[in-house]
Image (cartoon, rainbow, N blue to C red):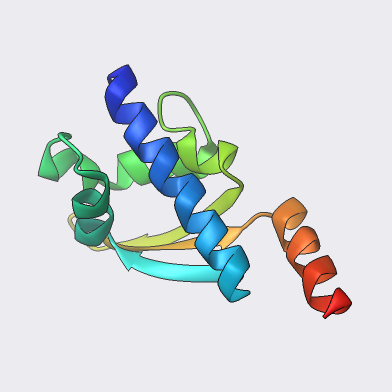
Length: 106
């Protein structure tokens, strides 16, 4: 992943987390295509839909550590062809605690 590509993924993940915090949501489910479109990713369609790509994101291993660093846990299910269509992004415990503190103050 190029530095520019990684920066776009990071900026999108940070914006998503901010939107979720503002809307008081702990998780959202997005289609892989919607994520790719929002990021304007240049990654190959097959790669971004691969189970291997999302396993790397889920594990937070470089170069797919963007979501973990942005405070997300990832859940997905791959089909029989190991193809991923949707991904659930959930705030990690740290961000869920911060969100709960905001909710408790209201």
